[in-house]
Length: 431
Image (tube, rainbow, N blue to C red; front, side, top):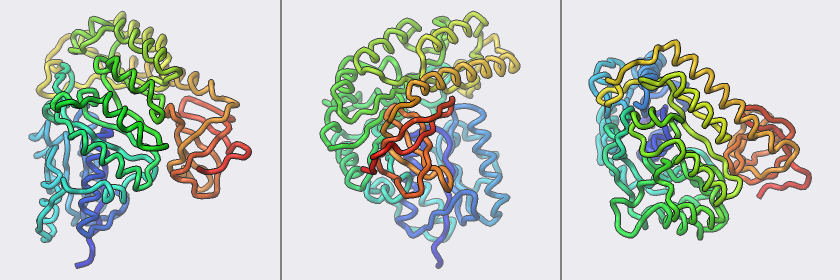
């Protein structure tokens, strides 16, 4: 039988990206050939997200699009949407296979069965070396934990991902070492609730892990996202001592109103967040901080929204992700009143997005005329390459050579809210 073709389409967070990489490696190991999801394939895998109603809608749209693109294909809808909203997923006739979270072997087994290729599927034994064959060449996701036990009133993630489960410390360290040996120049430590790593283990936590990963040579280390209350003094000390940590942290804010934060079930208040950012900047120097904000939470008044805008301005975020409140089934906030009208949500979202764009452009302006180091990731077009600074700013520059996975120095000539543009600095060589 000719090798079957397979395409992957991933929605959501970096944990989902990691899970897709595991699946890609497993299918390639079984003789499948990966193609782009815009192309015809024998199998399409849609790794879904359920954080908002819009993300679920995108998953449904993708499944229907792939069915139109190639009607005979096997389409597997997997991940958080299936796990958290199974009834809605079952009503999607275009999907042949439905599998929730935490069982990658089941995805492989169901697809193999549908194609008449039944056999064992030991997905969890996929090695870092096998995973290095797929995904980005320069940046690797390293998932160290899954699950969340916070149960914020708006969030469906604990229902989709289950309780906190940490990977064994030695296994994480070994995986990181293998990724570096495979040629990756940057590792992104990811998890559903990253700061909870080690709570279910003995003698392990995120601070100790950072310290251990610091001794693996010259590379770049990032944290995907961490809740404010999980940033401990020990973690700040470990990040401050690290030689490889990239000076960027994503700290979800969600609201700058204490009243709204309390209704959300968040475990900090606006002043706590403000003091934490101040402490981080004192401990780590010029660290970039990005964040998430939810607008239109039930009961959010104009005063609450103004408080959020003020805190966002004061924090000088390098990047801002804005979400309109989306009621999620089986969460407390889905039943909260009064609802914020859709038109008001739209206006507040537009205002917050504009504020975020201004802050990003202001942050980028500090680099105008300066030379910065970037890790080149991929061509942006036939004549442009793209990479990221250590504080996670996208940089585009002209280049005609394959510099992917190399560090280069770029002189910044122009900036806007989306990133920066420049040219190879005189004397800069790939390294």
